[in-house]
Every structure is written in structure tokens, then in C-alpha cells.
Length: 313
Image 1 (cartoon, helix red, strand yellow):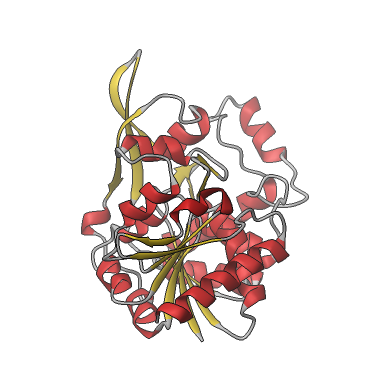
Image 2 (cartoon, rainbow, N blue to C red):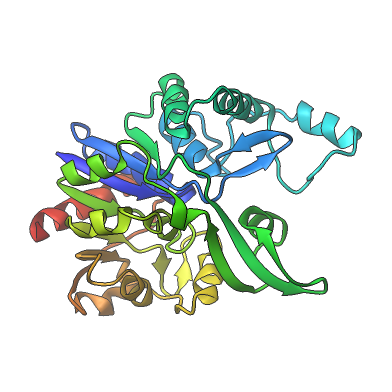
């Protein structure tokens, strides 16, 4: 069985851990979002790729869902002593090592896909992890505050401002000129089905789909998604702020409609949204508990996604 999943950060990574347990013999390719990537302290940081890699490789800070376990922060403290910022984005010492390796390899001319493969050689995530593109794509958010209307990097809006300043628009800068990374379209074409984990539908899955060629390739396959919205609220994070920015209601049904029946064949919703079960504008909807309280719960959700894909194929 060959499965492709499009994944963002914490929710996607935890689902993938369950998927790996639910289908241990499957050939799983993960296409990771790079729109959250940012350059800090002269280093290239890829938060979503690293969260998937650390989570599946056993090195994640489980409580946070991001960053390294058993982390120390000596470098951060030294940078603060030199009054070097930004102070709102925390990188630990172990995490710094990953970004140093990545930045050195990129500087030597290796594409991000090759760098990611090299990092995964250390972490052994049990899946093939591909960035959506080797080209630089960065998500920026247009806001309006006391400084006027301006664009900020997604990370500043998300981490420093906690998405509390309403977004006027969200733009994946560079996406329209980007190309899928080597192996991305081939993996989708060879897949038995594609899964959209409960990642942010706007700035994670949506950004991946914005790279020319990826959305039509995915739409040609059987596609099952897992709702990141339960009972009208995000499972975690601030996806509601992103949905509001693009004029989509924060509900499981609205997110399914946003993806559209031309892309989505099946949709898993939580039992809190069981009223949607059945056919939703050409999308087959099934209700089941979706809270990933532990790896076993995530595996149960993944099995339900696999079963629905098999039913619809």
C-alpha cells in the first residue's frame, strides 16, 4: 500500500505517527509544508519539516509538540546578552544544530529536498519526507495595526502576535513560481490514495496545494481528509484566525467545502459534527472521535481514513 500525506506541523505530525502504527507495512511519503520557513540568526529554520522529523524520529518535546526533548537554551541566553533578536522565536541548543547543518548544506548548493533526506538519515522517521518544493516559499500575512497596513512573516503573526491582530490577507510568497520538489509528483501519481491530516487547511495543506502541479495531481487520486475543526473550534492552534482571513467559517463542513468535491472524496469529522455524516456536496462524510489523545487514538483515526479511502477507491 502506497500512501501520500500532505502535512503541516503538530497536528499533521501526530496523525502521521498514528498512520505509521496503523499501516506499518505501507510505503508512506509525506509532503511537508515549507511556507512557515524563516531565516533567523543567519540560519534557515523549517518548523514543519522539523516537527514531522522530530515527532516520527522520537526526539520531539511531547508537551509542546514542537522543538526538541531535553532541550537547553544556552545559545538563546548568550544571544540575549548581546541584545540580538528576535526574542519572540525560541530556538533551543539541540534545535540550533539542525538549523546549522541545514544552512551549511544549502550554502554548499544542496537543494532542500537533499538536505531533508540527509537530516532524516539521522532521525529515521520511517516515512519518506519531502518538502513541497526546493524553491523558497514564505507565507506572509497582511495586517493593520497602529503602524498601519503592513505585511509580516507568518511566524511573527503566529508566534509574536498570537494571531490576535486580524489578518487582512494571507499570501504564500513565491508559491506561484515554485516547482514541486523532485519526487513529489511521482509519489502522488504512484499512491493508492492521498490523506490530508488535520493540519491547518490554509497555511499548511493550503500552501502545499498552492504549488503549481500539486493540486491537480492530488485531485486525480482518491483523497480522504481529517477535519482539524471539532464542534466549530480548532483542535489546537489558531486555524480559526486563518480561516476568517480567507472568508471561510470555522466549521468542519465549511473546511470540507473549502477544499471542494473536485479535490476531496472523503472527510472524517468528529462525533460532535455527526450531523454532517452522509453526502456533503459530493464528499462522503463519516463521523468518529478525532481527538488524538495518544498514539493509539491517532492510529485509530488513521485506520478510519484508510478504510474510507478503500471504500471510495
